[in-house]
Image 1 (cartoon, rainbow, N blue to C red):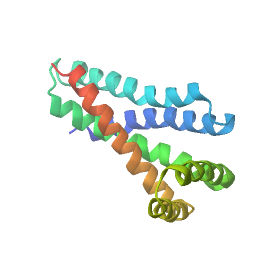
Image 2: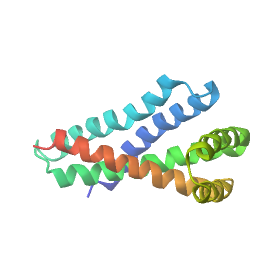
Image 3: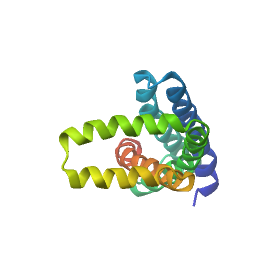
Image 4: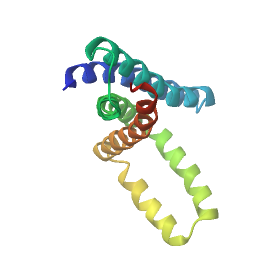
Length: 157
């Protein structure tokens, strides 16, 4: 299908997304960068899907084609973002520990003890780089799937 284009364009989206993640972590949770990290996939999926439709497919694309392409874009972008996030968390492990502690404080106030123990278990596994990388790729791909559902409806003709 369009694997090569999806890999290259997904790398572009992932590169910009990774830059947003790195800047957000360096600047200490900037809200504008957090919003930008949501906007980048949305704009990127729309832009690259429109280019695919107009340049490769003669101006016509189905919802399914657009959704599959957006899913491929998100997967390849997720690899880049996951790698960058994992490297940052290996080099700066306090950031993940501080974020986990903040979430745990909120969780202890609002959740049951069973849920708190489950969160602690998951958080302890996140300290391993491979687990963190796989979680990052899976979550970014899922996030891309949700955005792909929306952009596919807008781009199809």
